Length: 507
Ligand SMILES: Nc1ncnc2c1ncn2[C@@H]1O[C@H](COP(=O)(O)OP(=O)(O)O)[C@@H](O)[C@H]1O
Ligand SMILES: [Mg+2]
Image (cartoon, rainbow, N blue to C red; front, side, top):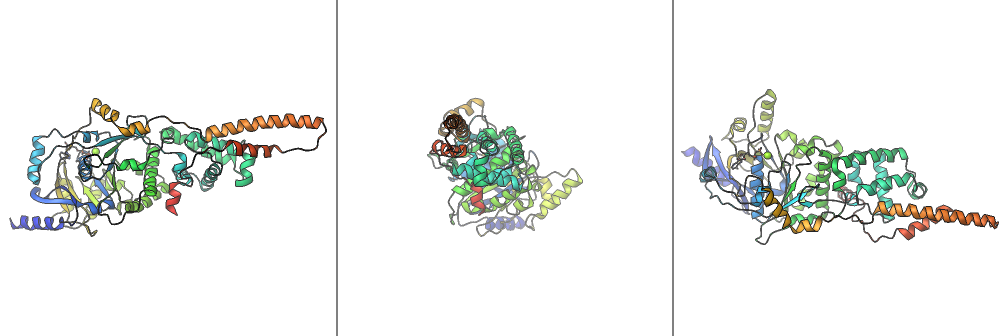
């Protein structure tokens, strides 16, 4: 049919790139797959971010899996935020299935079963590499935003960070932070107000309550040592395949604050530490966030602004961010407008609201003479999606209803035994999972208070003796405290980033 030939040429021309690209599947016309009309995504524009959307069960997570596998195969490391725990199967080859063969026959590319190098990460006590950050690294700006502090309260947090920096008091975990908050309006009141201005106990009380809230969401598990080195996300295995790092977040769904805290700090850290990428033509790291509505739903306005700006900035570091969610409207407009790749699975039109959402979604796709986009949106089958990517010049590729290829790895999760073996064999687990609670602000301040108390007692005894011998010379107890401070606080610890990564970023 001439029509099909013209369509084939249109798709093929629009999907021919100078550099390397990932094959997603073959384009469909009137519900039929056009064999070998391959739909591709150029590696060069992967850092332009993207969205994978669609109703439940339409194939979003498998599309994520396909993308991750193909990036890994090209030596590009990947980080997956696995909310439902359904991605671990990537570490095992697909058992294959006649339906998969049929699918690939239609597409025109052979199916190959394959496993990929996987590292399992965790934010809590679940199995896997523990990802942590210290309070110092997190920085006052981000910490204040995450706790939704007022301007005055944020000011106090900054002062406290400065004080800890000046006095070499490492802020590692929330215990340290709470201790210094208390100290600043209690034993250390005079000392701090002299150099940093008076801190009101009403404000520190309010901040403390927010810290407790953060702790209750599991923040005490996240803050501390050993802090995760983002370079460990960039590993390539001995066969040149990029590691697929799977962060299991099944226990985090009901703790949105912890999750958005983590996401932001990770992105900020990546932004601060990754080198600026020239025109390398391929991404350094690709991050997928499954069930992404979780980070946006409960985020405050301040936090949303932060996310927006970092999404914009991180591109230059060669990092692509992909949001996977049911409805495009789950993602804030300001983020949505920055996404280069859109993969839209089927939407369902049950209610008037659904139909409105479908119309809106359709309008956000390039116009195509081959499709009535809103109709296609409701008629796509499972494992089929509308794809609109950016070509190497940043211009949208032809809109294509696509029969997607199947994942090369297992579409199901790992068995317990397989997971155990994976974790036992992991070098990173050994690197990060020892418990460390080295001397930090909490211990140092306690020691300081103790010594000051002792000195004070000694001082008092001395004064009494001196008074008895009618001496008039009196040294002030505050001065004693001062010198004690210098003696006790000579911990060699270097605070990696006291003003916080984000402070750096926003300048
Ligand atoms: N690309 C694909 N190839 C083969 N089967 C697929 C593909 N995408 C989806 N499926 C089938 O559809 C099911 C649901 O897909 P999934 O990605 O879990 O949906 P969602 O994340 O949208 O809820 C899968 O378990 C699989 O059987
Ligand atoms: Mg899913």
